[in-house]
Amino acid sequence: MRITSSDEWLTVNVWTPDMRTSTLPVMVWIYGGAFTIGSSDQPEFDGAGLAAQGIVVVSLNYRVGVKGFMQIEGAPSNRGLLDQIAALQWVSNDIPGFGGDPDNVTVFGQSAGAASIGMLLVAPGAAGLFHRGIAESIPASLFGRDLAADIAMVIAGELGCRPTVAELAATSPAALVTASADVAKAVTQYQGRWGYDVVVRGSVFGPVIDGAVLPDSPWRTLAGGPGQVTVAEANRALRLLPPVADGAQAYRAAYPQAGHAELYGLVCSDFVYRMPSLHLAQSRDGGGGTTHLYEFRFDASPLGAAHTTEIPLVFGTLTSPVGAQFYGSPPSLAAVGVSAEIIGAWGSFATNGDPGWPAYDPVNQLARVFDTQSTVARYPEQASQEIWARYPFDPFPLQHR
Image (cartoon, rainbow, N blue to C red; front, side, top):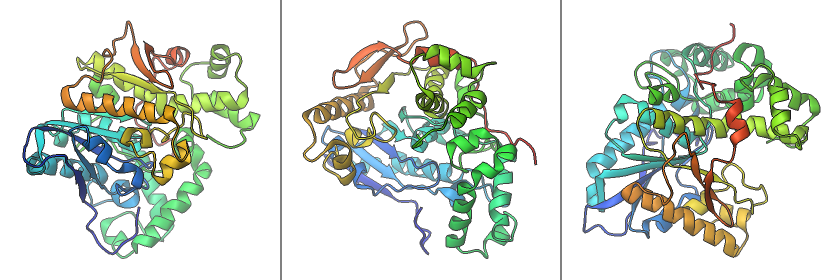
């Protein structure tokens, strides 16, 4: 989040291949950043490559951190989501002037942006404003009102005030950002109060079930890496995160060759990203919708097939600073090929709803696996799927005051 004296945060960027028509498919990008940081002006989010496929590409800015998601008495909840909805309303009204078809809008986003898409699917204010969604790594990031209010109380307490509009109005934006960052850094101190779930996420902000902007969890509604990981850290995660009676034994049995560090990475990845993504697909299918599932396994970056490493491939921005960091300069032929595959699939889905592989169903569970040699196969994470099969992904609750 940039600290600025201006309130002109709600802006959009538009790339269009042709302004003489109003029939082109539209893709709207929502960036991630744990609902705490982020901006649409990062070089790797340049939409020119996607626009070259005959698509109007829009990226938007929305409030994050304290301004976007802290629970403040006297202010609406989920202000960052309201910003996203306002931008989608602009697209609906004004995108024909840039060549786009307002009746053919696909939202796509990564991490917190992917979670936002899940929320927008069930937010009444977003109804009818988009027609498809591409969610890249959906994190578990939904907060109950009591938990969000308690976190806000702690952050405001750092500044000697209460989390109300009147009292925070006298506080500088810079001080608010610093206070929230200090609380996030010390989040382990609040584990008994806020839960280990919040500690694992490492962020104290997220959408809140407020009954207005978000009436309920999208999972429920649609259905009806550390550096050196110690043995103790791995055991704690395996004990506290899996939703089964003996989660540690379940993971060790499912992944018998994995050491403690790998097991830690597996259970945290399942909880934070993989299983929320899978469960949203299952909820959407169970509720009568159509979902196409994919898994990104192209591990050519220094981080492997890690969170965020797909972004330069999605946008075709391999020569951007981030793209060069991940895939070299010049990029490898393999990276260029995977990028072309993803851009083609995303563009096809935005155009006609078909990314080029079968829709997910609970029997066959087919998914596109993006890799050096991409395939269509049964969803690869079968062992983890079984462990998390009955987990509801409800909002994080306040443990105790």
